[in-house]
Length: 262
Length: 305
Image 1 (cartoon, rainbow over the protein chains, first blue to last red):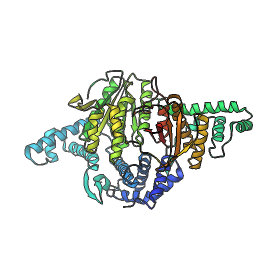
Image 2 (cartoon, chains in turn yellow, brown):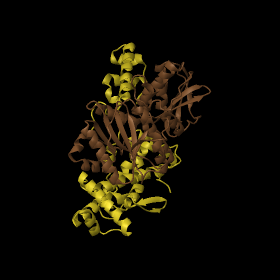
Image 3 (cartoon, rainbow over the protein chains, first blue to last red):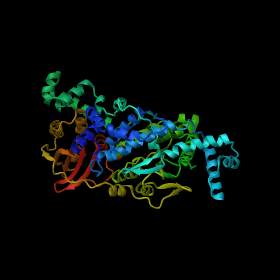
Image 4 (cartoon, rainbow over the protein chains, first blue to last red):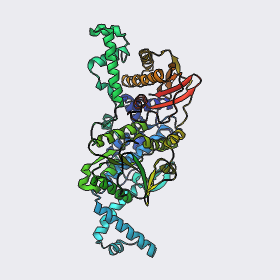
């Protein structure tokens, strides 16, 4: 099953460029796979719990995550790899939307009691107990049992495997969705992580590095750069070394080390 | 799961849960114990589960740091850096830290092996930090191959209480086993640089421009390449050859030196500190993959952008 209208080489180029933070490549990659993402989104039908727009956004986020992680050395084609993450992202969304509003410690303990009672009654009588049986066994009211079982049911059932169709495993979670637009994924692209160590540099350091190494322009000698800045070649060399050291320090610093987390 | 974070060094453990209820109950208890003891507490999972644990913790959730793992596990080196930074941040305000993190696995054998290797690296990457890491695995969703790796990569597992595992493997040896051997890349071309790092960067920059590598990424490789070339000059008796080019859609640079090289499969995964170099860490952080190999010309380090 082809992943997109792209040739394998072009697909690989776009995946690599997307991982590098190239927004143009990223858009082309996403556009190419939107029909596939839409196809997966349609499988989450039923219940109208999640907007299709949201599913598409999550699907695109899953595709971009896959692009950051995909290793072409794998024998698996990109879509074979990425569809796993697209589906996972959509499942997460459905689980999030359908998640009970609160699962307090008390609810967790109560659920444990209900489950234990169900297990005991099932073992004792060989049939699934009714809610009334569970209420009698646990001391909870029928309303409490109904509520606890509703909490229990939703997230668990989302990961329940239903069938295998076209070689792709289906879960109940994939069958819960709502059709809609495929267009509104722009904000996902806006959230692309692009590391910008160069932001640590001041204007002069940046000018020296960019000119010397021909980043986006023809390279220049240190002497020529110095002439343009009114500095000696040796001073330009010192500025370059300071700039490289700043970049090295920035790269060496683990992200978040300076704060206490979110 | 009640037990204190006893010491001054890493405690790397795992629990495999059978149900979501079990996950929530144990995780909440673990975090509550940490909060009571004045420890920094971290939970890493996907958004849905973060929200569930937040609800279960109630007001205490405000004292826990939550990490959305939906975007953290892109490359092992970056995941190590991300956790390392978070731990250091927490340790600025607490004497010790406990963290729960759900294992994130992909759909392929290669992916599983790479991230099982990451679990092995964890034993070394934070070994000196007073951190108790509990890796959580959903028994109903995690592939058998990954589950088999749990006891190889965690010294302790939670079964009936915390129990040492009999199958724990030396992390370096396990990473070595799980890491594919670098393949020769005959498509790369030699460039002449000598041992002068400025000339090395100038030549490398020309090649990057010829391959139309974007400026920001070109700068990343100039910095990463400088680190590798500097190591070759400083520790490897000089640069024997530099080869560059495009392979598998990525720009590749390899530096072959005249020295005996090193034999450490986790080189560059351990954050810089006393006794640990900075160069390969920087190179791993700035590139997509780093490989070390031996060739007839000498010892080589190769980075993929």
